[in-house]
Image (cartoon, rainbow, N blue to C red; front, side, top):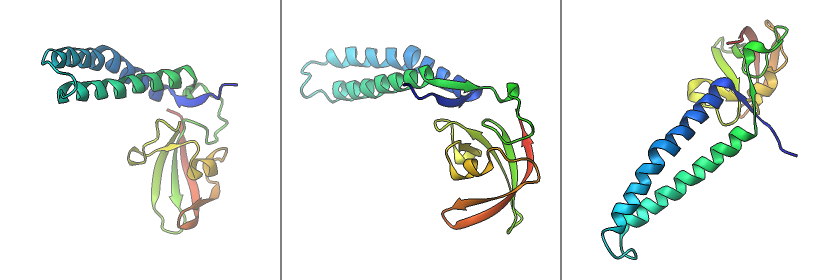
Length: 159
């Protein structure tokens, strides 16, 4: 049984672009570097050759990793979901920390897309799990490393 990996349309497109760049730009560049390094003679003591081979190994590993992720991806287009005004995968949620009155906006995305600095939080994060299924003006308690924090959902966007 293959476990499908939830992914937004944007996340899948970013992975496809990275894969394209690795296959069509980086891989040929590495092959050329290996060929040039071979031309310098003794391969046992050729640092350029060993460096290029190591880079090739990382590149091929990343290509394989992306291909597996894309083949197991369950691409979810939030704009086409019947959401019934609830927080769902892919939605962008604005919440209010009830205690501090701070507002935060997060988009709920797949594990590979998450980037807290860009306000993209994983579907598997405690914050997402606490928000999924909730409606606007609902208050929910989320378990964080510093304890339980109460959040009120102010806005849900499906973009």
